[in-house]
Each structure stands twice: as structure tokens, then as C-alpha cells.
Length: 367
Image 1 (cartoon, rainbow, N blue to C red):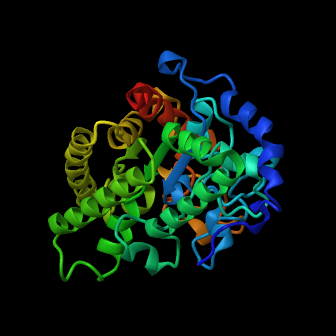
Image 2 (cartoon, rainbow, N blue to C red):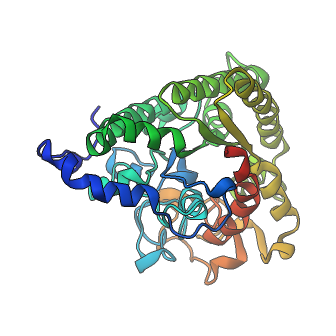
């Protein structure tokens, strides 16, 4: 498969010489970072892999039903337009890029309007519906982590044309990478479909996920990535859709899926520690979203929220993606009161609370 926007291809070798002064400015100039980086470090780019939490619109450009490029998605985004982000506004990839002073909006790699300067400061390869399990993206025809790695290899080739081999190597090694996926493995591939359960109990399945994750981190490292933030699984059972499907009449948190997420997380952390020990240049950072999101859900008013068990869109109990439209039974007036935008994804306000607690507090570990 060819995933690269063809408009990014330079027309001649003179392109490198013409763009080089611009590249120098882009590389060494950062907007004021929201967090103070150690030793006045500059992060050249933020590069993201994963699923719908960090997909800024890649799924718009592939054949899949897992899309959200229609209202009311994006209603609080700049211009009040749907971009393919699974939220009412910005998503974590955008906020992390802004936090380290790179840019306010991190674009989708498959955006047909992407320009070379967009590449030099980072993109997201994430695809809604993807996962660590190679079977997960196949179920809904989205980009697997293997596809995302192939796109990253092509990305490296393109920035090499622009800034040369040494410049590209610097960007690749100094950038911050975020990997955020795995929820769809548990929710859809394991519990919702019968595709894995006949052969795996949940312990064996989370082993499969962790081994796949470890292989992915290794491949990233071999391609030159060093600063890799790995987001653990959230308390999946407390997502509004999982309350509806597995929380009983009271729509409590589904303990089964929460326990599965906790089990995976308990295996992921030692893998990351072992990776850092084995490869001294590696800076893999474990980003704990599980306990952060759980705190918001258990103490919503302390964080400025009023609703923690329903999404803003529709009934808030089950709508997500194509079920969440302007024609669904209403959408809340003020999404900032809701932790969740739809039944599966936090609102922009939710992310604005979560990201400083999960990422900003750990940013020093990348250096």
C-alpha cells in the first residue's frame, strides 16, 4: 500500500538547497513551551503512533467505517469543523506537541494538504481502531502498527531529501514519540468478537499484546527513535459504552475490562524498564493514563466536571463514530462539563486536564 501524499515529493535536487535555510529556522526555533525542558532542550518534532485517541484524521483517507469526519465531531475545533479527530476539539497528540513547544496542531500523515515543513515538525500516523494485536486493525480495515511503521520509514526518506542524512538522523533521534493504543484489542478483539477467546484466556492474550508492543518499540528504536512515551491502557470498563454493555442496570464500571487493562499495564511497565536497561540510549517513558482517568471519574467535581458516566453526544451511553451524528438524539450544550465527548473518547476539556497530569509531569524523563 502507498500511504504517502504525493505532493510532498520534491521536483528536483535543487529543492534541498532551497529549503535548507528554512529548515534550519524550523529546526532550531520553537514556540514557548508550556513545560520547561531540561537543559534548555529543543524538541524538533513530535511523532505519534496508535489508535483513535491520537488519530487526527488519517482514517479520513482510507476505506473504513471507523471515521468521524462529520458533525458534531470537531464542533469546538478551530473553525468548528470536523477533522477526523475523535473528539469535539483537539486530541492528546496536538496538546503534547504544543506542550513541548513544537506546534499547536499535529497533522495526520495522510492529510493530502501536508507540506514538507509539516513533516519536519512531526505528524501522527495513528489510525482509529488499531491496536497492538495485528488482528485488531484487520477487523475494521484500518492501519496496523506495521502500516504505521512503513509510513514512518517513508517519512524518514522524505525528511532526508529535505535536510540531508545527518539532519534527518538528528530529527529522528531528538524527537519525542508517543505510542497510544491497546484499548480496542481488549474491548473489540477479545471481548466483543469471538476471534481470540477460543485460543487465549485474558492472561495469555495480554501476553500477546505486550510481546507485540515490545516488538514495535524495538523496531522504532532500530529506526532511530530514542525518546518514546508509551501510554498505558485507561480504565476501559469506566468508559460510557462499557458501562452500558457490561456495567449492569446501574451502569457501573465493568470490572472485567478494567481488570484486563490493569493486567496488561502490570506487564507493560516491566517490559519498558527492561528495554531501558538493555539499551542505554533508550528513553522509554511509561505514561500512566489509567490512574489519572480513574481519578477524574471518581472525583469529577474536583476537576471541574459534572458528568462522568455519559458522553456529550446523543444519549451519551453508546454513541461513537457513525452513531454520533448531528441527527442522533441531541448533543449536550456545554461539553466542558463532560469528561467524555462520545461513549468512548474524552472531550477536549477532558484531555486538557489529563495531558498535563500524564505527560507534562513526566517530560523530564525523556532527556
